[in-house]
Image (cartoon, helix red, strand yellow):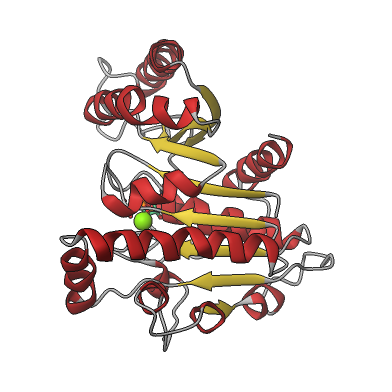
Length: 289
Ligand SMILES: Nc1ncnc2c1ncn2[C@@H]1O[C@H](COP(=O)(O)OP(=O)(O)OP(=O)(O)O)[C@@H](O)[C@H]1O
Ligand SMILES: [Mg+2]
């Protein structure tokens, strides 16, 4: 196995699920075998994102009610059959996804088990074993983990088994402050153990210029937007120094993605979208880290 990459953030809605899903697909298109795991076990979304009705979940694997091969779903066909004829298809890798159960009962069960030390240890042992199994017994090149925001048991476990952590954040002050705290309190420990962690600014300014709808002469959108961009670049530079982490990317907020009632694999739907272009760059960096 080449790498296990966890997508994490302080606040919710920073693009972890969107980016981890799109990146997984790009890696598959490059010929890699990828396993994407929904470890946002407290509020899973990948089942809805991929529109699947799984019989078994990662929860079943953790509680010994299913073998790992039963909880990973081969969704390579979704990429193969994606209706975009413009693209020439390279040899695809395999695309596996493991989903987390969003039922209240299952979430409570996981939380309940965490109250007992023996169950907690057993669940963690299973989780670590899963990575080993993928690395040595299955032909998986990349494990991509979509985690829960903040410092929660399964996020920390996901970070602990990752070789690389991508910490996504938006440019608002609450997210910046929280991320800074998390980076110094939590990430520094992982860095000491040899895990690399990188910052990914997402949903930043840089794409949608607000129109001057009211035609008011005192408000000039271009000038205002130029200020925002300049301010943003100062904030990212300062932040990078303060947390002592490298920045792997800076992705603008694309209104067409933001307001799409169901964003689904933009990298396949719009291969020439600037979002796709940036994610190609991100994947290239991931490969070379
Ligand atoms: N660069 C972007 N431009 C525009 N919209 C984006 C961008 N990145 C993500 N989004 C949108 O932002 C919303 C939140 O993204 P997503 O669900 O991936 O975040 P998340 O970090 O997984 O959230 P949560 O922590 O709640 O699981 C989605 O509607 C997604 O389509
Ligand atoms: Mg998510």
